[in-house]
Amino acid sequence: MPNDSQAQLMRAEWNELPMRVGVGQLRKPDPEYLRFLKQIGVNDVIFNFYEYDYEDATADDHPLTGTKEFSYEGLLELRERVADAGLRLHAIENVPKSFYDKVMLGKEGREEQIEHMKNTLRNMADAGIPIFGYHFNPGTVYSTGRSPVRGGASGRQFHLDAVENGLILDREYTEAELWENYEYFVTELLPVAEENGLKMCLHPNDPPVEELRGLPQLFRDFDSFKRAMDIEPSEYHGLEFCLGCWSEMGEDLDEVIRYFGGRDELFYIHFRDVIGTVPAFTETFVDDPEGNFDTYEILELLFEVGFEGVIIPDHVPQIVEETDGRNGRSLTVGYLNGMIESIRRQRLH
Image (cartoon, rainbow, N blue to C red; front, side, top):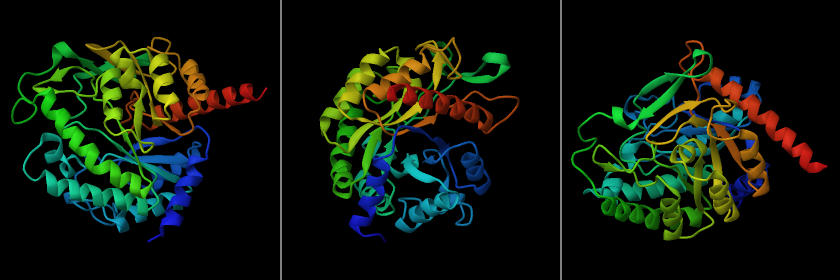
């Protein structure tokens, strides 16, 4: 296990890197896929484990096989497998929902879960992983289908009128309940993150509607994120800033980025565009002129507020019958890399 100074050094070196494009949504460290990412110009990766079923995982397939918490040994092996491909493991985005579902819903057993979560955060820090991105969503990312976008590619779609009837969970929950549970989550975990030099960052609900089948969607607007950050103000707590979700909200992206960027609370960026806002939207390519925002203007603004971190393609349209998003992510990585380099050179003159 690295000592405190070694772990802090690994994270400090990464904090000094400039804005750059990585890739997220990885579920396991597949060597062939990691080689592919290196070949298209990626150096940073982010793993997402929210819906992963670890009961059926094997150590050969995946080093993280715990059902209550992630071990230091497993996290270190994950980082080393990534490093063997010439990549950096920038963040763990989400642990399995079963690790903290009782915490989110205020159910019996939440105290045991929160202690396991504390262990997981300590182990992430000890393994040299600098960021833990998280949702606070006992439900899921909800879609109502897919819709054709440019050239017949397939984009995720949401339409509130098409949402199924019935409860998502065992009963209806109130906003007051979920806010109380969230405050418990933050006040218990953030001191552990601070003590170990690990950053935590919050992702919006997707779709960012007020309520979905009996479950309030807490993190759906500017005010809810201000409230979340004000619970325990800390340099170790910020936003996993999902441009797609914020665009779905219909918020003023310039105002939002200036506000949280000015507070150094943008820890990394999910970069995707959508057409439309709630109650109905369709995800599209970041270079689609029909999208809600101008990619170049957003990147210029991120430079202006001093953002230095990783930008990842988020959900991408499926191209030509693919299923893993590889083509869409390749397009997005190349497009963003070219724009970032162009803006960087202009700012030097």
